[in-house]
Amino acid sequence: MRALVTGATGFIGSHVARELIRQGFDVAVLVRPQSDRRNLQGLKVRLFLGDLTDKDSLARALKGCQALFHVAASYSFWTRDPRKMYAANVGGTVNIMEAAQAAGVQKVVYTSSESTLAIPKGQKLGREGALNRPQDVYSHYKRSKVLAERAVRNLCAQGWPIVVVNPTAPIGPRDIKPTPTGKIVLDFLNGAMPAYVNTGLNVVDVEDVARGHVLAFQKGQTGQHYVLGNENMSLAQILQLTARLARKRPPRVRIPLWAAFGAACADELVRGKMLRKCPRIPLAAVNTARKCRYFDISKAKKELGFSVGPIEDAFTKSINWFAKEHYVNHR
Image (cartoon, rainbow, N blue to C red; front, side, top):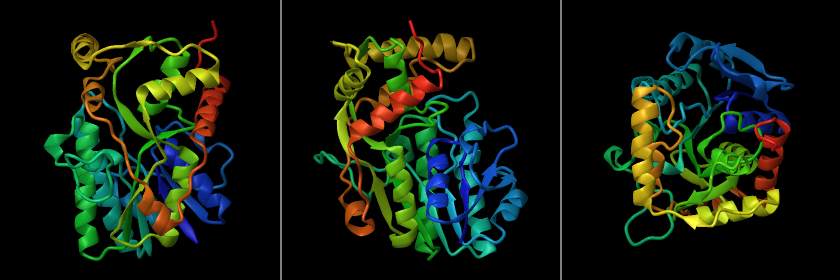
């Protein structure tokens, strides 16, 4: 069976492509001409140059495919031009769904995000179900993913064969950007995180997320959503675990959110607006930290047979990969 993977040069997408190859799929990948292709090195894939905003390139890449794994997204807490992010994440998602239907694709797995899911007041754990309102999330990335998932849910309601997965915060190797979660680990390793705020998130091995995508294709019910996560951890716990595995001292200073908010505002003004560079402390990241994002993954376990390994293994692989690829400053 042939499957097209979008976003295969990225973090989650590269692992999805590898898992599909491991399970015997004939894998095609859609790659922008300017993309960093390090994550595709050594992979036997059919490579198609194109873009989510180029409908002709989508039709070419999907020809002969029975499956689509739409993982690609513009992912950042800060962007110079939000319009490009919405064009890729919202418009691009609609484009490729329409192209998949025209190509006769049998089933689609759409990679959304845990940030699209609302955690009702009074509940400690988020679950599949209620979608956040666009105005209730703090960044263009999160807002674009909410709008994209809303569009996908509308297609599901029309009977389109789509399964939605909502990964939490993935960690592991091949995080070339790195992602915001990987940046927490990398900043700590490089001595750039002397303090922390009181927040929390659900962390999961990116390789478990990749297996969850394939399980969603094999066992997921169309129109359904599945949270792919593992361990609910406070930021302090994440840093303590990283410190223990890296044999370093964890930061002991916890700063209040108002102080982090002030630093982020100053950073956005100087680096973001004046220097036109990505802020070191994106304001959207601080706003997101106001609430712990903890999740219940029992639905994916029950309906997909989704399983996860020890979270320590994921952090170990992440630390070792950053060191091997020379992201860590050795002083």
